[in-house]
Length: 398
Ligand SMILES: [Zn+2]
Image 1 (cartoon, rainbow, N blue to C red):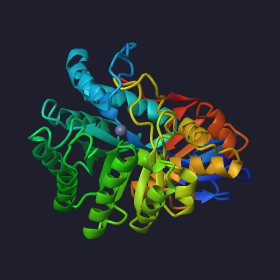
Image 2 (tube, rainbow, N blue to C red):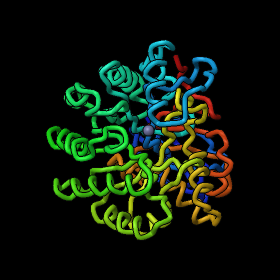
Image 3 (cartoon, rainbow, N blue to C red):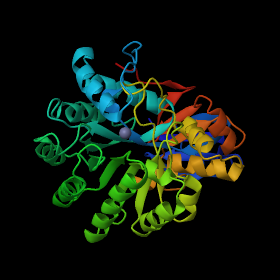
């Protein structure tokens, strides 16, 4: 049997109709290129071909997807939600392996071919979340690539023993060091940043830190992150997730931060949040900052929202940033594919000969229509294998 796939009548990035030939998991030709005998041929029906979407910020270990409707009653503060979640993990029986598998199947059906997932590490759950997501990663390795961030959701220094658990998670093969609100959660900004960058140096790994802190507090934490990135030669290896402080109207506060982020190649992850101040994506891109996007938690104890659809996410980013021109909406879509690939350091990503054959086909006339209508994905291909058709995954979720 041939390992070749020929997708005919398809429009890469909404361009002219052509065919894409895939051999041995890679794009072998775009236009031309006769299909080898025995190749599978699929009619693309004039759909747009996008490179695989990149979900660059998920929490696979704790979605409640498939567990019945959860009634949300947590208090308004961040710490209320953190404590509520730690308690509910026990009473609801949130199994990280089962739940991450459910979200992975959902994501694949929506055209994501790569996920960066933060996974909780704390003194109650220990490394069970990491082990669960690692099991899912192994089980679905032909369907999606998963990168894991060890994430001290409940704080690092405020809960002694967490640093040691993070160290063990990294020794087990977790790829990225996570962190959270050095001032607001840990109340020891220098200590927190020293610890996570220390772990990054020890294990030779990148950093991706959640920074929800608003205004000047967030700006202060971000300055500490920038200083460490510079001092330790980690340009291009640090991501700040959420970075709500960049949405502060005070340009005298924000503009120097944006310039420093660009200079030290510190990436920003945004969800395009409807309810918080948000990084101004167009200004960041224009100043040279790399952006990626993610769903963050979907249907978890934090909120009832989320669909794992990165095309819909592009729409949310467009709405949040008042992007209306097609070229501006295309920028939001670019953040949801190429931006994430840049942040995750994906080699062989893209729609060119030689790239991994990670594709999402969408029935839309233009890229902007693909984002705003985000219809079910006609076809999703991971390294040359069809993993979803007509919005339905070919592998059942547990
Ligand atoms: Zn998050």
